[in-house]
Length: 142
Length: 142
Length: 142
Length: 142
Image (tube, rainbow over all chains, first blue to last red; front, top):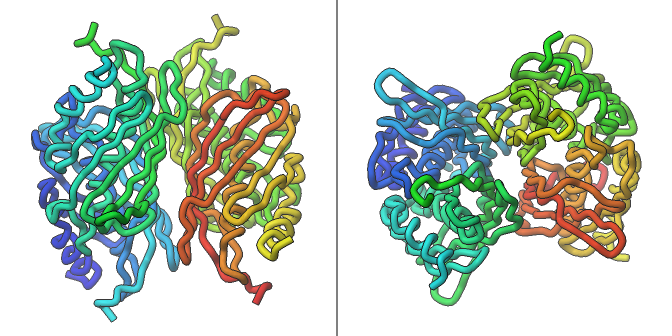
């Protein structure tokens, strides 16, 4: 396991909200991260679909950790902003968020991410995010 | 209580995710909605601040319900997309999302919303959203 | 030349702003469009780079025409909203915007687009857009 | 005239694209800027309305200069990203973009801006922007 990998996994483990959502970090590579979250009735909106806020939360964490996976040593990351397009009702058994670094600068990293709903062997795209993340010196790491 | 009011409150009550977040609908007016959510350790990111996804979820619901409060009878609403800027770390005892309709068209409504962190009598802005919502005929209401 | 092709080319030819920018439609396929624009001193910002507004204009037209290329017959399209990330200074001889349909619904189409700066045989990405486009019945076509 | 004022006016004067658009800087205050642009047939899209790219260009400049009006001495600003919602067809004799700083941090400034179409004494909102701007040390100013 690389240092980048460890840094991402250690930070993810500290995100209580990911555990509240039942989300798991399933892939960590240099510049890309995947998070999976099973359907839960506790995460739904008025029609029984997954709430856009739950989808956004895993997309945001996936983008942040994709950025962290390429950030300089001793940095941590913070989301500056993101935009989400909701492409289809979030209906499925399992939700998968895949984020990739689009461009990594010294201070700012831009990531894009797609969210998919899976049921059996069928998968469809339900949302897409474009996000800006900032590198911050991590006092604890210095 | 007006019909619009009822429609918003009835739909909010069906959003299981809002209850998971501990969020409450505190104001419903024609074209504006307020949602409050107390801090909870179960909603945090790696630094112990509120996760951006939790802030976004209440901003999204607030925008959706502001749109619903002015939607034609027999319509329901769905978020098309939104953008969030995270303006300051989400540190506080209570989080307040206030959404307003910016422009309501026949099909699409654009809302803006701000999120504030309150501790005692101090309040600071922590995030802002610009959102597009679509009116859909509600089969159940026809 | 297909009907879709013609519809896009005819509409593009009517966009006076594209001609003011010196922009040309270079590729039209089902679901994807490319527009090229040479550098011009009349399109610059304070540092002599291409103005973000000029880059955005071609990205917006590219997204709109990608959406039109898959829209039902007798529809025209209108941009609902877009987000642009500016990834690098727009320095180059030629600028190329490539847009693709990400998801086409009955009413709304979501497109993503990248803009590149080319100088000789070198190309680098300078901006990326995520856009929402609406299909409208075209009175002239009925 | 204050220093901030001068800095904004000097930079605006160097934006050749603003002059190509016929845009003028009409208000500069600490934290807010107004730009006006008369209708011109050279800036239109396929229906003869102002092209979204032209509207976006003046909104972007207005946000950038609102940010510059509060930036530390010796800094210049660059747009990181923005989102625009197009609220109504851009039909009018004169277009007015008004930008305000929403939050100014050390590195990043978030601005919002509205664009209005004016004809005689009637004005209607046609677009709204939410933008992120970065402060950069200006080598020329040091």
